[in-house]
Image (cartoon, rainbow over the protein chains, first blue to last red):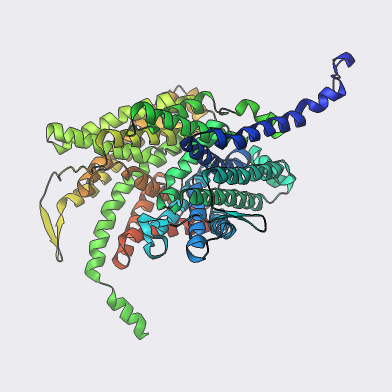
Length: 333
Length: 297
């Protein structure tokens, strides 16, 4: 062990500011910007930002698997979609439509899907896990697409937004601004919970599974159970994102259960930086911005996924850590 | 007992025979796709997500060549060659830099490639279904159906391609290189086998097989840009059920699953028949995660 020369030790006050304070100051600054954003942005960009946050939540949930447990899920569309349809079910069957009931139903739907996927696919590793999650999400897609009486089939379900109702405190229609704040609150809470989870002993076990699964098993952890917990947790937050998306857009459609949503989720993760939790949100923002930019430059018909796919591959080869990869250790401390 | 006897009597024998033929035909096409996939996985440890798109692109290129020349067989060969070159290019540009990294990186990279190829096809050809006419239009009578000979020809051709490839693996010089690399790549390299060239070649061969099956399949249902995902999913199921990287296993599994789906389509809607293969997959994962057609170790 080596000691730094005494005169190089920074003063105590500076040391205390070094990480925790800087992190929370940064957090507060970003939060302030996001809270203020809908007040200054025009309508279109307000919705845009809200959607980026929702996609970010979806990507963040899958980061728990990709970045922390080392399992690539290609099936997050199933959780997202079940969250959507769960919310739709609550909003269509219960009147007056209730926001919290929608969230509850959505989470229950996503939890059901997650339990199914977790039970079967966590027996497998790496590539097999990726393929089986993809296939399971496709099962849900086929069921939702063909079960027309319940799910509306190809047309999906259309419903009206519930009121933003906080018991005893607040009850009003959603405006785009309050919608944004509501989504922001949910996403922030999810981020803080996920951050806490990844720093907890449970999260440490997940990371040790990522680093060396046989050794984790040898130490005595029940790897399967931890993986199942991780998939369940990840599925719940993905379902939450689905509920938010359903409330934001007032519909549930089978397109969102389709594989492409899962693919987008993985792209957001890789672009933003896996294993950072905020990276996926940045990735979602980057992806949607590029998409909007390309659509404005070359017209709506332009196949924006071609240049984005090229960027994606280039990033995998040259920047595997993603946009926020440089800050990965710092963010997780 | 009466109920059981009634059940067996209710099975329409003619339908079963027809569906057996159908199942074997689609099974052979699936086997052709899946064997390329499992070959690439077995040699390179790469799960080629873009395999379905190579299949789809093969069908489109076959369509273009067919429109230009009017000859189906030229389309088959031309498309296989073009896609083989494309596959080699993909391997050299996107996959070679990833050798030695976590295999999950290659999944992501091939997924990116599949996105690009699929959107390119959509952009270039639009959402319209294109169709290549069958090269032979004679039919034979199968019960009350006029069954096209072409379908039988597809099955035979797929079998011939797979068989030819097997012979090539067994006796060809490059085939022996491939097998050596599959067994032990470090040793193969030490013996002077150009392993990077083998990798590129394997990817090209796999791509060509996907393209050939695309062209063969195109006259049956037509070509559109989303067919890649359906087939790659089926091929993944086949490869998992057959045992990843197991060449013979995936061929057996392809026919097995296609037959099951064909039989299921007698009783349920064909769009639900897919669920049968999902069920097979789940059962396989539960009881024989290494594959149904592999001797348990």
